[in-house]
Length: 309
Image 1 (cartoon, rainbow, N blue to C red):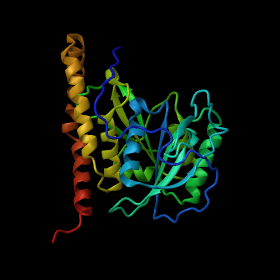
Image 2 (image 1 turned 90 degrees about the vertical axis):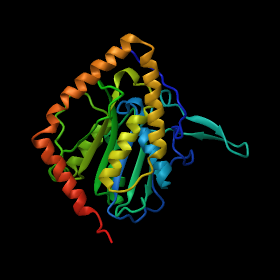
Image 3 (image 1 turned 90 degrees about the horizontal axis):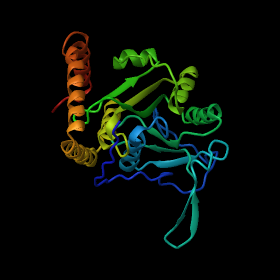
Image 4 (image 1 turned 180 degrees about the vertical axis):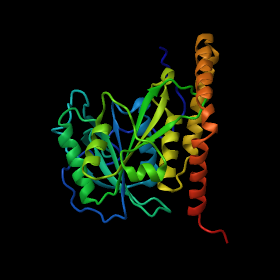
């Protein structure tokens, strides 16, 4: 299998630990009063192929500029030989330690009737059940109504086609309202799966968004997958998110992969095979149930649009 590193100008570099301070707290000083909040969570690690999920979260952090709530104390959850803390110097030359941990913040997206709790974290090394329990305790205190997790996986797809984002849920109401199907996956899971399962058992409805990453360019960054995830978040929350920088990065990434493929006949043929397979698999989507689903979505969007003057 081929794996390529594609370099291009990036406007949104990933910054470990987010933009808050390096200290950690296990309890918030004061919880904000939020409007029908939805929690969006991403984690570095196994569920984040190509850093696409955390890349999407970093973009949301950039555009929404959220207010910090708390940082989970990493002491009992992380192996610091695997996720080592970093030492930095501030503008005055004072040294500080930044601990890689999970941070919660909240935002009020312009035009949205719902507030958003953003969880930007690292998959823990230990005590997963306790970690998930702590996160869901915060969700309860913040009166979160819906949990949305972002993930990314490696798949046999061509880089030249739109990145597919699957949306799954175990909640019957969400399945019916969004006209999506439950996941039938069985096998190893990561912290995203454990969080969703525990939330569902506690009565918190959830959605999982998964972007597919081309297997031959799976090394981060993956701006085209980031764009696909953020676009899906935009659709679900019915808000407008600035996507211009992401679109430019995705185009530059795709052009870079095109150039690499043009220099290797074997890779170019592999991409063509994936394209043919992808196009063939989508042919049934032009008939039957898929058209009905798409038409229902169209009518719903029309119904939700404000009347024109």
